[in-house]
Length: 555
Image (cartoon, rainbow, N blue to C red; front, side, top):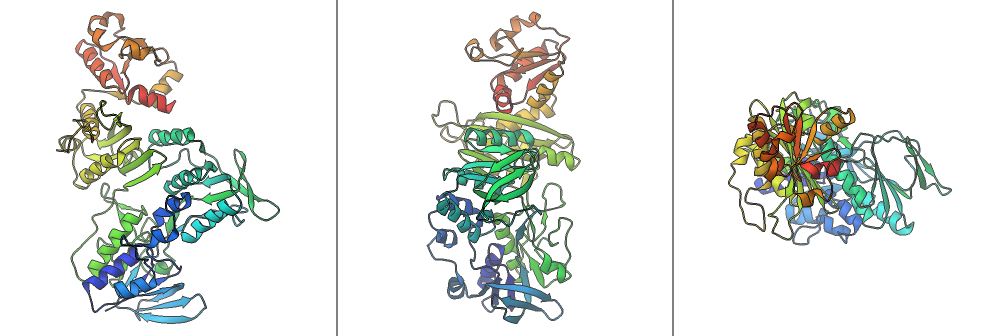
């Protein structure tokens, strides 16, 4: 069986290696336009920062072997044609036309073909975008170019154009090298995979570390110095000095080869595939960032390019073309990134995405330490959980903060894959010991708050809704039920202070006709206060979601 694999970074090498393991009679050839094979592209920001000391570390196996052409030939029994580009696919003849960097051409016959052509950066037509000192972090060569500018020109002022995952990771990496970094984002927020208030938490954290974030700002032009190197970025909000610019606006699937061959392209712009990664041609498979995905929650096509997904898809494609039963169950858009000492993670649908998809939803935001208060290294995390009102089906989660966000996000990833309800999530038998989590883990406590909302036991109010009401001078009572010592350090403007332990005896001080919004530090006592008020016959009672902690982060 002759198998040709086009693309040698993630999905391609994974598929090639798996095919040879399953079919020792297979003759597998990888065609790769660049020099480097099977490298950890997601590790490039950490190479720039110096955390990864040498380039070769991104291309080695855990045992230290470099995954170059010789490695694939000698260890994997896979032929590699790097510095070579697939020009055309002839589906009738089962041939691929390949051209090397010298212009030499050859035809490769195939029985099965795997497209792993990946994605390409979005490159808007901005005047001056071809100046020296402007890079896209699309490969090892770009990382070396960025490091060169840092070392040779002693770059200090850096502009990151685009505030997506790669943009924020590069911002942290370059800040760590001593640069003054500004993120310029056209949208209203960075990290559009997150809901606005959760993204705002990240923006605040960036700013606390000295990174400037400029949202709703358009880049109009790049201006050069006398040597032709970028020196200034002209934006809709004014000019910014720049020794280095990293373009990180996003990527799109690289599908020209597939389109020219007449393969079906999906609604997302990526190659349409079935759950075995098979294209509209039964002898051609597609995997990785060029292939369309299936959203587990909505059941609709989606496109979320990630290295983790690419590797899984490469394995499924290999199994399928070798006749082994396997399939992709779909994706949840699970993502995580490090922003200095913050973790930012999400899976499933955000509130924004769920509403756009037509779901009637309920949400909750719960801030709390990731371990009991008596454990010295307990750290704060903010959890936002989203569920469908009618079915109580869990739809998604976002977790941000200094503590263990990854664990909580991964718990919900499994729950979403299993189609669990909020009630089932709350009942999970998670491991517990004080060094690892509270007795009621953060994710279980958050699920229980959401259950209270769904059951009508509690009605929440978001911080931003409260801010909007205050701006309109709408009549309400802000009820602070913390202790006197806590209140001495500050309270919400215009709030009334009644400690929780005194509330039952001081109900007469509150106007029953007013809307009362209860709060404390995280709104646990605020919830207790709301219960007391409702049991006493108060009709308009709400709890401030996330309490004073969330208010302080969003103001």
